[in-house]
Image 1 (tube, one colour):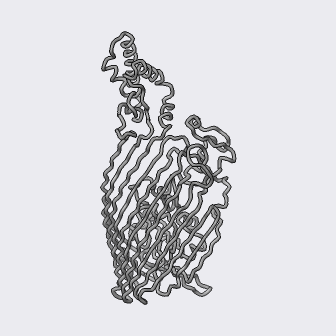
Image 2 (image 1 turned 90 degrees about the vertical axis):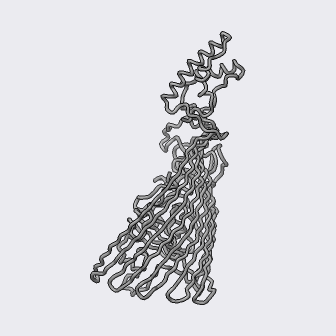
Length: 564
């Protein structure tokens, strides 16, 4: 469910900011060269993996420098989408279900095995997990959003486009250090800072970046199911750090090593806030879920209260994520025309969420999702720059391992919810079985819960993913006003997946499989009804029930008989 505000929602001041920033000559990898007043400024981008004038790049690009992001108060990807046409960034039921789209085309993040159709890159390193990109953008030199397929040079799943994030590189003069503090309503406190350290003049420099972000939630929790109070859901609790080293032994070689770590631990998300869990719409018309109050759930009022930012859930959602990695980039200018570039990276990402999946404070069911991902990537390429001809030739390797532990589990009222869905069709049968059980002192078992609490519909999966690619792109200047561009990429990609589905009761035993369809349930109920009559007659005549009749009752005496 996307968190979108209704058209007639009256926004509150959710982020009134008071900021204090100390900055010295903030560095940027997107250069803006001052031109005469009669000329357009030159904006250089790396949308084609080399520095070019934005006006000469045959790609639809929106580019921001770090200074421009600060002026526009772009703190993360959700802020970025408000400044980039066609870019969408969404959160669903939890922070771990975040996804991106460009021009309306994206990939759901709720299937852990899928990768985004929007290619996500930080300092040239591919990020396979969409939700690893939702943390704060701190000490960023530039962001470029490329719209449309970028399959030649950015071959990893970029049919929609690509987002390229470049962080500030270490420097020797220290003039790009900064400390920033931002405070606002809803308890907002953002702290960040960065500094460069020159260890060996013009040879070795380091840069340290750190940030923290806290904010109360923007959605109230009401009802009887969980902790209640104002501003509990959609809070912010994030922090991270990045350490870099830049080694330049001579004018031709540079080595940049980056280690980063980021953490998110939040109560997210108030997914159905635009509906307020209501069964009464804005016009006061009653919806179809009339059983909700009988199950202990809260029904919200219609009218203006329909758009209040509040939800009623059985328990507060939990979302945690850790993202860490190490990368090394080597740039070697072989001569005035050729440059060898190598980018190696290892990344590890872990996420966990536990959410109330029925989105009401009736205790029906929930979901937990524990996932882990580790990946390694290696890119190596030759960049050639000539008078009329420029080209890039490269090879790319990517591998990742995915582990998923997922469960949809039932809560305390799910059995009542299931039984209410049957209506009174089986009431006589159940009354008869329970009467026989009472008459025999429990020797014949009573009716068991059809859908007992604590049952897990579990899904464990492991995926191994490996990809190889070779690519090239050529730009030949036919004239001062006409350039021919041609590119080609070959990719070989394999995914091996092992998945185990199971249905386990609270005691660890597997859910029974007596009835696989409504038809089988009706047939089984009919047979049990006949058997109950036979058993009653036998007991009244002082005889023992037959084994066949007792066997006909067994499905309804076994916990979990209704799940199939």
